[in-house]
Each structure stands twice: as C-alpha cells, then as structure tokens.
Image (cartoon, rainbow, N blue to C red; front, side):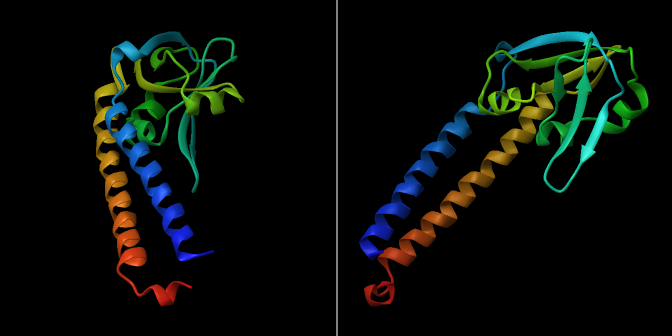
Length: 167
C-alpha cells in the first residue's frame, strides 16, 4: 500500500471518527421527552452480572416477556447495594426506557432486552436519569481526547516524517 493510499484511508477514518464524536457529543443527553415510563411487577429478584466484558442488572417484569438491563453507565450510577437489599419478587417498579429504538436497542431486541435509564420503587430512586446523563457527559471527553491523539499521530506519521521510511 502506498503512502498516499495510507494517508487517504487514515484521513478518511479520522473524518468519520470526528463526525461520529461530534454527533455523540451533541446527542448523548437523554431527555424525559425521549423516554417512556414502564411500570410493572418484578417476576424475579434482580439479577446482577459483572464480567470482564459487561456489567449489568437485569430486571424481568410481569409475565417475563421482556428483560430490562442497565447499560455500563447505568450500572455504575445505580445504587446496587440498595437494589440487592430492597427489591424482591412481586415489588412494583417504575422504569424509564427509550421511546425509540436506537442501535443498542435494535441489537438487544434480537434477544428481547430493553435498556433502562431510571429506576424507582416505593418512593426510592435507585437509578436517576440526571446522574446517568452526568456520567455520560463525562465519558464524551474521552472520545475527543482519543480522536485528538489519532489526529496528532496522523499529522506526525504521514506529513512530518521522511517519505522514504513509508515505502
């Protein structure tokens, strides 16, 4: 592969990454108007899963037809100890879930899993949308830093180094 081709491919990937990062930055804040409230009765106690690849809490409501999961951010922000202690089979809970199915929901839909962003039961809030959004906002900076690093690498590697080393 020639240096010119490498420049074009890497530059194209950076532009796509920048577009995705900007879109993520401006569209990552969830609003109440984007969400709908689901109320139901727990069919089973909450299931906690913590692996090297994924951390989540699973809730199964009513007749067990849909499973509700937290995302990684929701898992971090949720008061897990209180959920373990307080929520039992038969408890009524209220969840906020997305009205529209994004890519995560479409992929999870293949196995009938719905992400939730707020969890309340008996007047106690275990996961709050505002805290979820604050944590998500903090994660956005990481993508800008990552993109900036690769942009700097691109500039240095393809524009400021000797062309003879890239053949």
